[in-house]
Length: 245
Image (cartoon, rainbow, N blue to C red; front, side, top):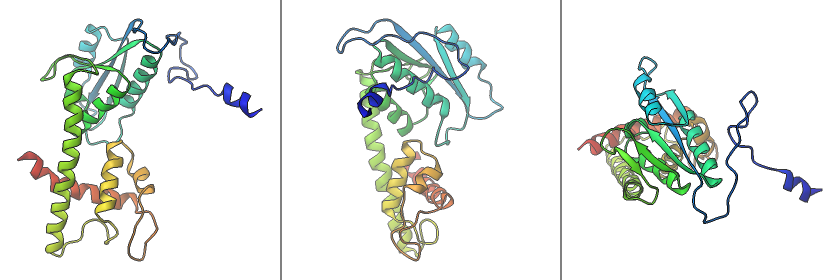
């Protein structure tokens, strides 16, 4: 029966997977109830394989985290699987009525500028706290606190700033007879959408599947991942001088 099938369709938490040790998850509580217990999840990241995570892992252990997610991946990577897993698990635990804090050695391990701001928005939406053990933002930050509010505001302002600088750069390039992107298949609308999707940490392949060429011989087709990469790289190169000033 369709109704019975729908009833039996229950989401499986990330910790429930083949080969994992069974642990009891916190039980759901009624809406509006005070959090029962507190879970501290840790995240550590190094930019290259040569860099060591030992210092971060030691500080997280001293901070009493329950579980640590770690990875060696560049800040420029469009996706960070371990960070995504940490945020997902934090949201699942928080939805069960338990207070959750994501603990990180320093805010730079999460990203810079708009990346950090967008992550803060996601954590705030799930009511997950954030704690930095060192650095400029050292301390515990409540989702309703000023740090989350400032980061969310910074996210919106930086998006608008980048968009305006991009359009200015494109107009300047057109006046000089230059073409933005691959073989004239890209435009401002495509770039804006690509930036939005990249901010959601989608891969180049997935971004390309969601874009459509609107002019020329390839009208109606999807651009190649290489074209998307070139378009975003040219955008970043144009925006970098403006951001650094």
